[in-house]
Length: 96
Image (cartoon, rainbow, N blue to C red):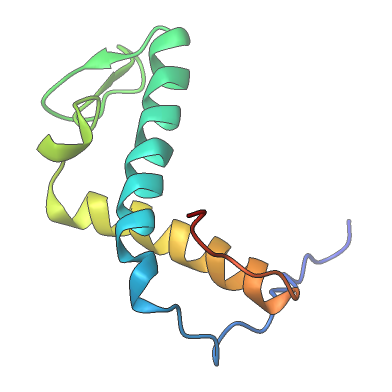
């Protein structure tokens, strides 16, 4: 077995423009909804704490009801993806 060494794109110097703030929040909510739909399809339901045997998870709630720490996790995932897109030479702009 070989040792896995992650190869991240260099996004440290990439700063997202302010106009992407709304997009980040919309994509973070979509990311959560995608995750939640998959879990629900797998038979998971809401539970006050995570229980893998009973397939219960406290984050199976609408995005706006998530604790701020969970929202921030989704935001960071989106922000890193947007930075990677920019670092690969793409532009992100809103259609008029």
